[in-house]
Image 1 (cartoon, rainbow, N blue to C red):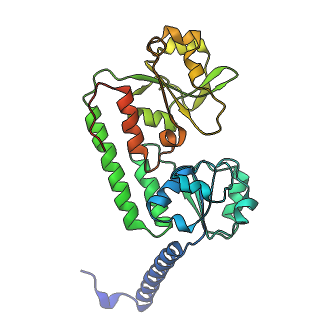
Image 2 (cartoon, rainbow, N blue to C red):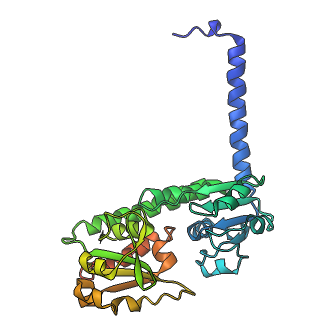
Image 3 (cartoon, rainbow, N blue to C red):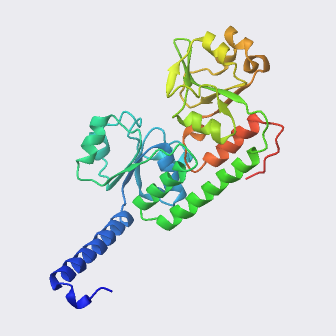
Length: 297
């Protein structure tokens, strides 16, 4: 048993002081989060989470990937997530800057971190565990922890339900994700990408599971991969005609080419990894396995 009378008074005083400072810091952090009135949201998923949390009126600006909901496009725009101007962001007088992982360039991010404005770096979260963590990070930043936890739990449950439904799939579809055509060659996704994670959530197998990141392939390599399905995306202002993919002679010798199996989905919906991800994964699964009866969400 500890003899309380033997504990020096200065130790007790230091402990109480440390505890008091910790409480003050926590209270200050909560107040700071709650008082954010001019938020610059960088990352389409971050913006979607803010809308889900009821924080749309506090948004001062968004980036060009913030296209959903449609109302988000009415905010001032700070440009592409990977090509930010620190001066442009700071000119909007934000009191909170939310930067989704991958924001850049590094020099601009460094300047924002040193500008004296509160900056929160939000993890990308490209899997069933990381997505709820992303949502909770945004919620903490704006003082909506309880609502963030509720939203994260809902999304986690929806993804778990889809995984259970897909457990009965026999042969998994082999999927090739093509981001774009570069000099006529397909830029395809390997592991560690949002596309790879989405294919997995939808019950498919990425044909490039032995490759990391994105890489331009030869069409001969595509033939050798023998994908069942080619997955691609559509987005506003894109010059990439995904229909041209199936016209490639090399693809005709694959199951995807023979069956005309090209799936096109909205870019942010498919790869954004925000609140709509469970719905996107379910939609993709329904198209990969049209004979499988999935529950409506």
